[in-house]
Image 1: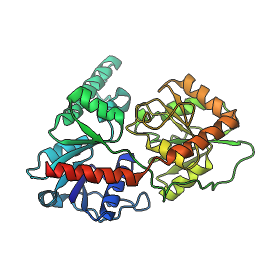
Image 2: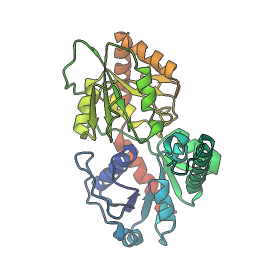
Image 3: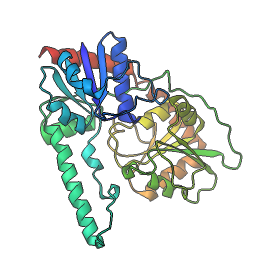
Image 4: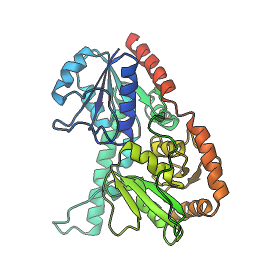
Length: 358
């Protein structure tokens, strides 16, 4: 098969990592795979961030590639609209990794107040932008494509809201990259180490401020964070990594006791899977994406999104009880055995072959 994936850009995030895994593994199975992004002057993917086994194609090459491949895979709503406009015979696929319209939240919009708007006027402007953006993104789920998704809640959403049938390809974990490797020594004054993984400034729905509020005045913990950006200097974080390599991320997860993941919603919950695979106990919010693999109280603790009190209670439960932490780590490692990319990609291969023949 000849397959073209189209990304919005090459910035490393969970969705891009997933696409890279599709590409690398389909390539190893002998398929002719291409990838390009819609940023004309985009730099190449950072190989230290996540390996990509094929050379990326240029934006200007997309029309030519689209005419020679059997499958074209869009990976975000912007790419879905672009692919829809291509006049080609290839099967068009929409790989839905999240319901991106959920990200249209007023908290994420900054309005310049050069015209001295009142607070009510600013809120009205924000709400108008949110509504317009939400409607625009939702239109992408109506496109006449074949649909892939990463979890059952997305499959259910597509069917219920738009009557779109879809195939689930669960995200695996690359076990060559992620495995337990405790690396960093402990501090005697702060024996429990808690990790926050998310964009710390630009994406409010990742819930970083919720995590930080839940950590206030807990004295025996060391707080680490991983992000694609810098942190607010006023935040009480002991150590921060900006864009660490995947090997470094493995060591960070493995050296922490608890991953505190407080997103308001997630498509799949990739950081929780990575943490489990590295032997780190997980607290995550009940945000759709984790439903397929988390059993509350057995392999992780679930808290209510945006509920600081509930998040804090779950955190204190783990901080103060090593037995519970150890049990979660043990069960998390068992669960991680099911995060199998080989199975997912073999199923994906069959799905693509079926769609080409239809």
